[in-house]
Structure formats: C-alpha cells, structure tokens
Length: 218
Image 1 (tube, rainbow, N blue to C red):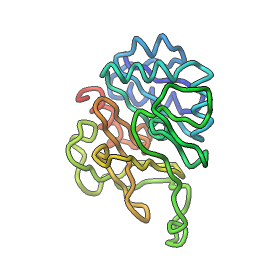
Image 2: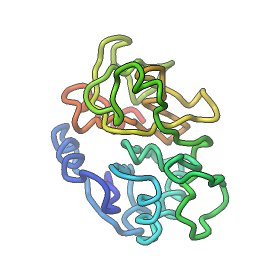
Image 3: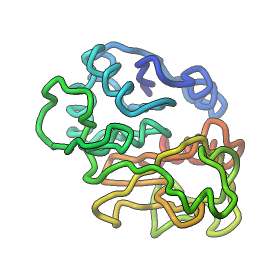
C-alpha cells in the first residue's frame, strides 16, 4: 500500500488522484501506525520548513518517517517534502542542523540527506525572474535514476512552486537539475529516498511517468 502522509500542508487529494490515474491506490493518513505499515511512503507539502516540522512533530510522525526510510522501503518527497529531508533551511536562519533524534525544536529537519535549503538569491531578481519560482521549467536528468527513467535529457517540463531549493552536501544525490538563473537540484535520490522539488501530480504526463517510476522501479 502507498501511504501519503497528511500533516496538514499538502494538496493531498491531488497526489492521491494522480496515483489513481496510473492505477494505484493510495491511502492518506496522519497516523504513525499507517506510516509503519506502508509499502511505499509519500510526503508531499507546500508552505514553510519550520511549520512543516512543527506539524510533523505534533502528529508524532518524525520518528516513524525516519524509521521507515531506515528499512529500505521506497520513499518519495514532493516539494516541501523534499526540503524537510535536509538538516536546516534558511527559512529558519541561524540554526545548525543535526542528524541526532529530534529534540523538540522547530528548526531541525529530518536530516535524512546532508545539506541545507537556501533561498533564491538577488541575482534571480536582477535577471528579471520572479521569486517564488512558479510555473513550468525543464528538468534535466543527471546520471541514471529509476525515478526519472524514460524522461528525455532535454525539453521535458515540470511544474514548480517554491522560493527555496535544496543544496545537498554531496552532489552525487542530485538526479535532476533545473536552471533558474543558475542550476539547482530539482530531484534527488539517496538509496531508497527519492524526492522532487517539482510537483509530479501537477505535471501532466511527465509527472505521471515519475509517479509510475516510483511505484514500478524504486
């Protein structure tokens, strides 16, 4: 069973319907026990890093998500669900991330992928681009990722809506990149942990291909 984690910050029904379109049932739940029994886990989300971590902690979901990923079962983060995989975000300045178990502070991410989340810089504005980065943009696959299998090397557009992006400490986890006044990681893969900054559920046929890859290839 695919479980979509409900922590109050995602377009959950859109993600669920996208899985239904590829013939896969997905359960939406905010229960730790549902996370524990999932065969595949999806964490979507829109909003702020600190608010997301607060919501996950209030629902007692941080440890179950970490434990799930430690089992090797496939995980997919979408948009904010990618960002919370990292240690710290510039949305919460002056905070150092940690890989230790959560201490109750709001600033700490899940720390499943080393690195931080940063805001698009002023050069984006100077070049006439807008923040947030919202709308369609190209994702270029990097290396070979099961998540992006069959996605062409050039010219495939996905839908984005974000002001911050991930800066992994280890560039080898980057499996997709996008140019927005400079390249940023738009998809990552670290073992069984996969995530996209773009919204596959809003990205038409290309997005459905990514979700199908998550089900069939990861």
